[in-house]
Length: 176
Image 1 (cartoon, one colour):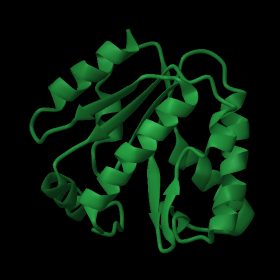
Image 2: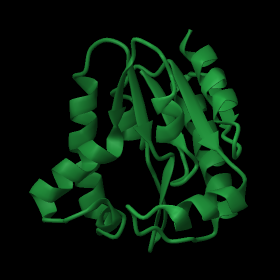
Image 3: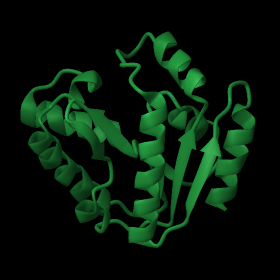
Image 4: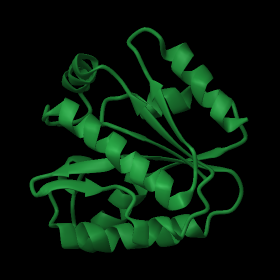
């Protein structure tokens, strides 16, 4: 499994939509939303990070159980960490990360101002414009820990405005 992660608005899914590969792309948020709707009655993605940490942990366990059963080449599209009212929450807790065979960890990031602009211009979501620089720095720290824990290489890809093709090309190299 290759795990592609980053800030909301960094362009993870946009970069993934540009790749050509035989990997199946699985969106962690879709799985989490499905489970949290069933378990806790939330209505949309923007409610997910506001659930109590204990409930998020319960849902994460179910997501990782599903992920561990997946066969073949899989790319997991996810967040490295989640900014919650109680602080930053790891998107890949070690307890569950050990259930997966991780080949590479990829952090997709972008300039803070670009991320803020993308968030504000996205009509499909209600996203907070929190301290994006802090969140990005936390993601880099979390990714380093995930890499040390799994032994998988860590790659940082910058998804700069109007340079999507370059970010896609960098990700394609990781997939080969």
